Length: 279
Image (cartoon, rainbow, N blue to C red; front, side):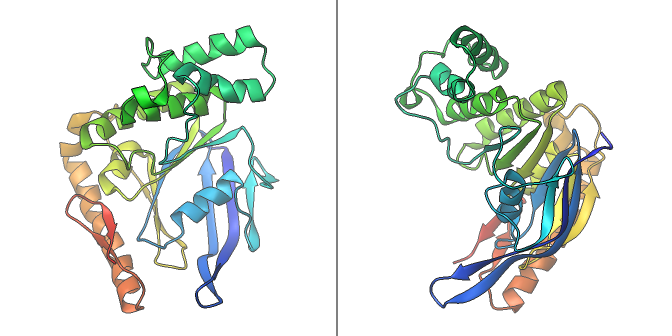
């Protein structure tokens, strides 16, 4: 686990503001290492560059300066060994659950019988056996996201990058999927990187949390989440969980206050540890 899988070195990224013709810095001089097999969450106020950071790791974006390395090689674009799970399910509505999971395997040229067997294995892994022939419109939100997770894992990635994957789900389904992802992470030994606005979710799922500064985003601090294992529903009532939540809440509030003081759109941290955007 000590081997570095991702290394970001002094990376900066800016975007053009079409309304004013100006440049907005999303990330500035950001450096970060992520070790193989880690479960890392990235949190920060709105506009701190969390998703930009994730997209740099995925290869959807390239830095304006600095570099992003994957296994010591510069990231030059998307690749199947770095798969992304989005907030939107992104399923093909004309394909069944099984067909959706088979799709990336077919794209890689895996023979029909082998990909069918593999797809069924991953459907079983996310506890959807019996729903293979259902179409997305016949599935609940949680089931759709399970199909998305199975499809992502079917690519046999080394790293799974998640951008607010549970944001559209109800609280109970969200908590169940959090536990499901942790079970898969523990069993598969993959590297997981989660971007979330939900502080309790980050603490519960992570073994390390990266706190981003107010825009332009930098790494404000890296916090080891030293909670008892395995993580269960009772983990959220553990004194260390409460202590970590209080500490990270203070850190986030400091960054939100900087955003407000700078006259930018503020994010507000509520008592559930979710960073909301005030418009």
